[in-house]
Length: 237
View (spheres, helix red, strand yellow):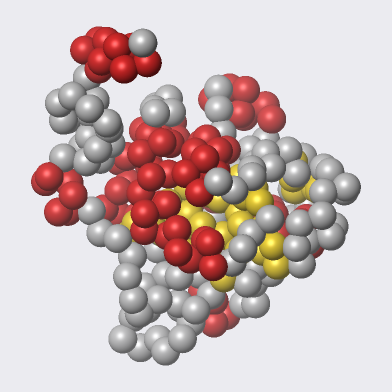
């Protein structure tokens, strides 16, 4: 019955490549061959802190991380932002929730070793402001975290941290404004949860301001070490 339903669903809604949105035929959602060749996965040398690709002038840390000390220990991302930006936009703003499963499979395949090596107690998605989440209908980070948790058999704690105030879009702000914009925007919601190591999950990492502020909330409880994984890393400012 399940196979029949999946087949019927594929006939009614044929799978599309998550990157270019072109039809890819029957079966599990996947990238088309052209996009598979064009998408850029992050590979070394990478920043020891955030995982951005290092330039020839950078030794261990990228420009962003060399200028500030983060509250998280380290993190990794899957793609270079520019090569996957249209897909991330559709996932985030155009209701393409089905992308979560595809992206989670990609993350499990490419970043699964890094994630498992940390022996995390759980995954925590970066929360959205409740009113904004209601308007959008979903939190893309939460969808991604839940799908990744299923792939790697790691528990997900969606309500461990809450976003208690709305903030300006970070793409409109410089580095200093991002930090000030996010101050006291997140609170720990469940003090009874004791997880020594947590991995935050988000769609895009840029300068680390959001991850730092969520980390601050988690570190105010029993958590001791925060890491992050993201779908893509954008250019710093």
